[in-house]
Structure formats: C-alpha cells, structure tokens
Amino acid sequence: MSRIIITLAMALFLFSACGENGKQTLTGADNPLSEWTVPASVTAGSEGVVQWNGFTAEASLLLSGSDGTEYPLEIIALTASGVSFKVSSNVPEGVYMLVLEQGSRTELGEIRVLAQTMPLSGVKVPSDALQGAALSIAGIGFEEGCSVVLVDASGEEYLLETALTYEGVSVVVPESLAEGKYSVYLVQDCCRWLLSDTFRVYAVIVEKTLAAVRYYAPYDDEIRTMLEWSISEEVLTITSYMIEAGQTELSNYDRYLSDGNGGYILEYDGFQASNDLAMTYHWDQDGKVASTDVLIYGHDETTPFTWNYDSDGYVTDITSPKLTLRRFEYQDGNITLFRVTSFEYEPDGPVNHSSAPDAIWGYMSLVEKNDPFVYFPYLLGWYTKASAQLPVRMVKQSPTGTGTLVYPLSYTFDEDGYVTKMEWSDAGDGYTVEYIYR
Image 1 (cartoon, helix red, strand yellow):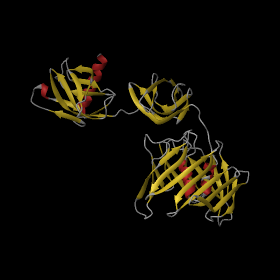
Image 2: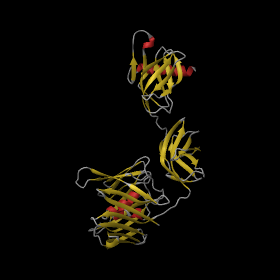
Image 3: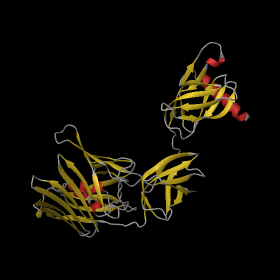
Image 4: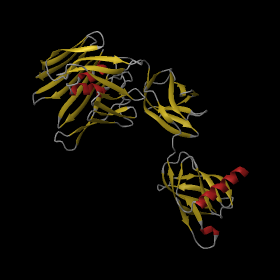
C-alpha cells in the first residue's frame, strides 16, 4: 500500500508541475470542495488521477456517456491530495462526464477516453486453416496466459488455448469447427483486439491452377468482345473473339512458345501490339523470379528487367537500367495500385480461396497486350502471392482526363471458394473477368 501512495504522490507532483496543460480545472473560493483538476484524457484500460483535497473514504467515481450509459471506475488509491482510478478496458472511445458520488452526485468535468492500443506489432494471421490443424499467428508482444477467440458470422465464440512460440503463438483449430469465415481476436490483460476478420476454416483445401482467363466487354449494341489467355507450360496464347447472337468468332491472336529453358518466344504476332519478342526468366535461391531478359521490338540485344519484392514476398516494382516499368502498392496484404488502376477494400469484404491466383493480376493481364512478360509468372503459377482480400471497388482515371471513375465489383465463387467471375458495370454496360481452373 505504501508503494501505491508513493506512486500517487509522484503522479500528483507531475500533474502539478505540468500546470494546466491537458487538464480541466474548476476553481472557487477557499472551500476545498470547490476546486479540483481532471485529466483531459485517459486511455481505456489505464489509470488517471484527479487532484483534490476533498475526497472521503466513501468516494466513488464513474463515467457518464451522452446516451446515459455509465461506467464505474475502480479506485486505485486515495490520499489527502487526490485519487487515482482505473478505466475498464471495455469503455468505448469517446467523451464522458466524470462524476463523483460522495453523499451527493457532483459532475467534475468532461474527460475523453482514448481507445486502448493493441500491444502487438508485426501481426500476421494466415488466411485459412484446416479443421484440426495447428494455426501459427506471428507477432511481437504476446504474453503468457493470452488466448485466441474465433467468432463466426452468427456471433458464436470459440475460445482456443494458446502456446507461445518464438514467432508468436500457436493454436489448434477444433476438428468440430464448421467450415466458413471467422473473425480472430486476441484476449490479453483483460482486453480484446481484432487480429483478422477474413480467416476461413476448411475441411479440405483444394488447390487449383489457372487454365484460362477471359475478359468480356461490350463492343456495340449487338456485339461483345472476349479476350482470352489460354495457359500451358508449353504454349501461352492470347486470343480475341467477337460474340454476336450467341456465336463466337475468332478475331486475332498472339502465341508464345516455350524454349524449355525458362524462356518464351513470340511465334505468331497477330495483334502486332506486343513489345516483347522473346523473354527468358531467371530465379533466385528462394524460387522467386529475380530477373527477365527481354528482346524488345526494334532492339538487337535483350534488356534486363529486375523484379523487386517486399519482406512479405509481394513484388513491388519491375525495373530496367533506365526506367521503372511497373510499380505496385499494397496495404494490409492487399494490392491497392496496379500501374495506374487503384483498388479499394473493406474490412468485411469478400475473400478468395487461399490457394487461388490473384484476381486483379488476372484482370490486368487482359487489359494490356504490349508487355506480356510481366504476366507470364502469374499465368504460369510462378508468382503465387495474392491479396489477402478481394477488392470491393476499382478506381480508374476518367477518359476525359479529369477526375476518376469508381466501379463497384461483385464476385461469383465455385463450390471450393475460388472466384470464377469478377463483374462490374459502366453506364449500363456489363464487364466480366472469368477464371477457369484445372
């Protein structure tokens, strides 16, 4: 108890030394009951101090919200100079009236409660796990006795015991847990934080690879176009079709043949749009594409392009000795900028299967034909890093050159959770990207 009193006295001294900065002070005559100092803010789950020499042993404090909700405060220590209190971690962020109940009810002043800061850094939650499998959550700041809670769409909670590891914590997903999407929470020091709201549990994880990607767009009132990448290790073909009255007619195509040594050659140039006549890929020791030697149209020698990655393995840019050919931006494991097209996400937005190729890369591979070497690692399954979520909106520059256009995106999934269609509309016209797996 003596340690608490000494700590309180030191806190009160610091409050006095700081003057009124960050405090609210009400003063009156010499009557000690008319003068007190209230802290301007306090963090949920932490302590605060009210300076006043009129508290009695019967004193109690509470926070009163504008909606009438009240939260009692725990009295930590009481001295002749003031009182220290603790705000419960479950008090929502906001402005409250600090109320003293001591024979009568007295409003001491407004105080802002700040949201508690999560004690973890570098948190990484896997996108999914099998029923009965071990789940490793990486991060710094986990403490002995913490636990992980899974919450399903109906609000049902499942408490999982944790074991500390060098990387973070490990838990076991119950075998009886139903397949579906869950939110992942950490419970530590009587507080609770959301770690992920896109985690999925599967009974069986089905792995598929791309066989083709197709892009449907309007051509005129009666005709639609379809552009398709047909994918195999030996041949990559991009083909254009015209669709009218249910009939599909070949328009043109480019075909790239494998040389069997990590290279592809433009064997048929129907579009006459590709800059890349030949390309050879090189890998680093981790199996990532490190560079590509590209024979560009009109050049006698190949140009080397370097693939650069962040610490999580996402490609950040593709550069040559003279320029940055492609640049990518990410937030929370989601691609937000691909060339000049932006993508927006929501916390509870849709999620693709963890083994599915990235939907945005598939779309981008079909909207430009001039530098296909950028997309071959994606199409062939060499580059498998995908966004943690699916974007809910696509933002593009207006064709007029001023402003942007926003397109809400919708998705269709197969029975295994793989996206099979991404769709949007523009001025009443429908656009579709279709993903075909093997």
